[in-house]
Amino acid sequence: MHKYIVGLIRVLTITDEELLNVHGRIIERAYPELKVISKCIKNQPQGIYDSKTEKIAKPKIIELAKEFEREGVDAIIISCAADPGVKEVRERVSIPVIGAGSAASSLALAYGEKVGVLNLTEETPMVIKEILGDHLVAEDHPKGVTNTLDLMTELGKNAAINAAKRLKEKGVDVILLGCTGMSTIKIAPILEKRVEIPIIDPVIAAGTVALHSLKRLNIWGEKNEA
Amino acid sequence: MHKYIVGLIRVLTITDEELLNVHGRIIERAYPELKVISKCIKNQPQGIYDSKTEKIAKPKIIELAKEFEREGVDAIIISCAADPGVKEVRERVSIPVIGAGSAASSLALAYGEKVGVLNLTEETPMVIKEILGDHLVAEDHPKGVTNTLDLMTELGKNAAINAAKRLKEKGVDVILLGCTGMSTIKIAPILEKRVEIPIIDPVIAAGTVALHSLKRLNIWGEKNEA
Image (tube, rainbow over all chains, first blue to last red):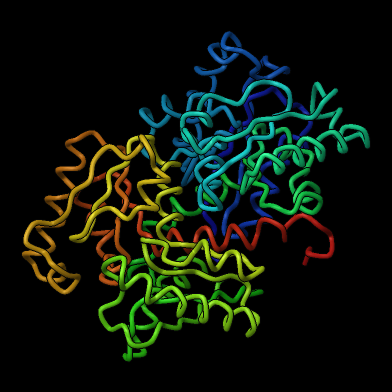
């Protein structure tokens, strides 16, 4: 099977190799035609959590993206629901650039017009608000949770399930996870099983759009047969 | 390779077997994990072109969808950019139901916030307007073209290219094809080559969302390993 190579940018500093590759492995498992190489930005172990840390991160994201392009990857994923640097990188490289936030919020709209966003703690990322517009009908977050580690406890998991249930009670057709930290801990299937409406995981969504962007032009002509 | 089975509903009567299967073949070529079975509604060789013909078609679409579910398909695609019957079918079957119009318009938003719609002749389908909201910044159609056969001529092709260029001049980031007839004649790659912005083909988009909906739940647990 021909494999497309995707460069994935983690917007926090991760030294543990396995943790660095978690998002890539999720995407590879969903879409075996994609091989994902992950890199992370330096000197930001807390990642991006406000406009100042986003500003510091952006040039590093752009640098990693250029590096990926030079190395010949077929597409780039910026694996954060806030899409940091996505617009800037799109202006600077000539391969597809996918943001996890824009991918997830757009894909959510294929499932229903009333979308709920389940955030970790912080507000709904601006890019998600902008894409959803009036389709964003409810936002919530797990009570008593301050980071993804909390979510991995029994208490945290229940808090997330309850938040998702509150969103469903507000009549949403579909729930979008507003943080890729929730992808890391693989909470989407737990939530979907308990709440019984589609849960859109931002990392899988990014993989979906990456695959679409690579297939879009490559399935028509004879020379791409085989 | 495990294949998911997708039931695809054509909303016009097609007797030619090859023509009936064109959309399915496009999806299978893009996503080899999907096997597509196509069926079409009866007694509507002109398809759906106004509210009256849509009303006549809906019960037939619902019937075909139920038939597909009984036959055990994994997901259903309604292969029309107007999403006829999508909401009604979703209420009546328990497998994923994807509309080509909602799939394409949602996916377009992953590529950019300013979306142009290239229609065949008629207006932009309501479902596309509803999903795009303020992101729908321009609509156009090929001049002098009244059906997909016209589009296959040199004149028609040029008219489509010119319409796409007009959309690009209005500053759109991405162009969405507002009719699956344009998928049938495979005009997306021609337009993208000439206009150089992403062109979202509604049939491929429907396949993309179908695959996402089938993968979403099936990639996490151990029992789905292998």
